[in-house]
Amino acid sequence: MPSPTTLPALSPIRLSHAALMTTQLDAAIDFYVELLNLTLRVVEDDPIRKGRRRAMLADAAGGDVVEIIEMPELAHPHIPGRGGIHHIGFRLPRRAWHALRARLDAAAYAYQEINHCLFVRDVDGLVLEIEQDR
Image (cartoon, rainbow, N blue to C red):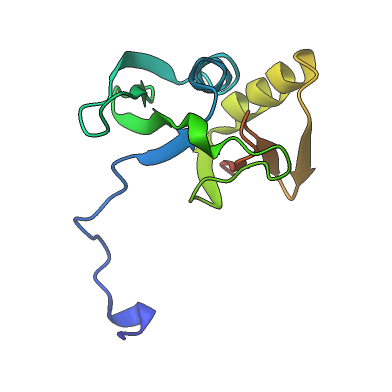
């Protein structure tokens, strides 16, 4: 494996989007749109997984960043956050980060703040780490 100093400064690879599984599509959409201010681009029949719906959410630049896939069979009464992703990291400019924290407070939505990072769980228990640009 190459050392960090031998890697090119810019790589052509970039994150396209994160795919999340949810048992509650509408509630998950509300969370990401109302609290994180992502834009709902489309809710549609999933073109890959027949009989399911999915939602595509975009960032401020219009790029898809989150795909939410409806998977009701993941519901389990004792194990929250059963999806395959441990957490998703977001980064916000300072002002937007403070606005998010204010929205979470206004909604009485639980979160932890550690070292200028907010840690919040979505409706399925998935951890979101939201860093503040410095």
